[in-house]
Each structure stands twice: as structure tokens, then as C-alpha cells.
Amino acid sequence: MKVFASIGPVAFGLAAIAALSACDRQPTFGPAEAEFGNAVRQNIAAQVVYPEPQDVDEPITFSGERAGVAMDLYRTDKVKPPKKLRTTEVGSTNSGDK
Image (cartoon, rainbow, N blue to C red; front, side, top):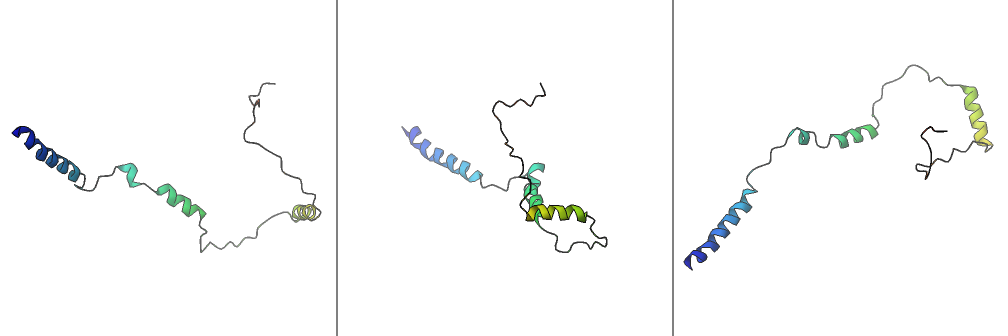
């Protein structure tokens, strides 16, 4: 019976050592973890306007006639409505077979 009585403190000691060994040191990171967060930083940079843009000395070229026609169509409410597209079609045949 003395053998079983001494197992309790030993088991407790081993469990305590195992639990405290998790606090041993900082984990070492591999190359993938070193770049963790780069995608988020890239997305933020892509959405931020540069506060000091470069000056452009050249004028922007466009067709005034074409812009005038577009504005007239907009003012008279004759703008072509966009096509109604769906991302999924049940039974669609887009395989090229005719």
C-alpha cells in the first residue's frame, strides 16, 4: 500500500513539470511565420491614397464629343441599362457545343 500512496505525489509532480514546461521559452518561428501579416499590410497600402502625389504636367486627353453625348444621354434619361448577369445559371451550356 505504501507504493500506491507514493504514486500520488509523484504523479502530481510530473503533471506540474509537464504544465510548467509549456512556459519554457518563446517558440521559434519558421520563414512562413516571419512574413505573417504581409497580405493585410499590402491590402491597407493599396487602399490608402498617397498624400503627396507626383505632379503631372501633361493635360488629360479625352474626346469632348463623346463626353457630350454621354452627358446628353444621362440628362434625358436615355442611358442604356446594364445587362442583367447572374453568376450561376442552372443548366447553362457554356461548353461551346452548338
